Image (cartoon, rainbow, N blue to C red; front, side, top):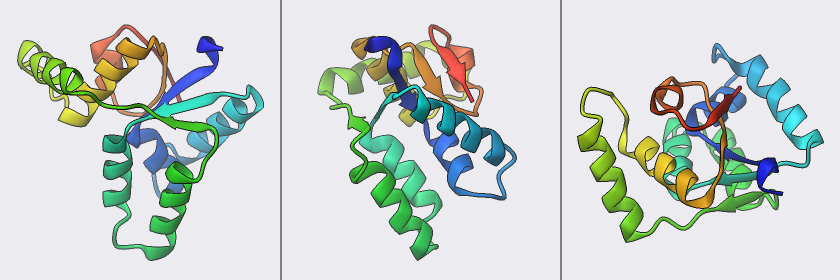
Length: 136
């Protein structure tokens, strides 16, 4: 079951919900495959916050985002602990030469803690950090 878990990054979900995004078609195709594989999605409230903020001015899309994350039986919100916060800050300091945002650092830490090895993402942060298979 663990191999069928994929962490959803905000870059992936923004591309999926915004037809103007460069990777929109890739996100749609990728999501179709993930659904066919009966993938369990994992994310955090931080990722939801980033995606929701991106579409905050569009009420119809904002409602879709809320449903995508909060009414989706395939999506599991990982609890983010105080230890995760501290480890994310440590990573940001350790990798000061990188431009990781705090949300991605939290994602790295949560993925590692949960043993999730695959991430759906279109930014380079997950490739830079390493230790996971980037799909998308």
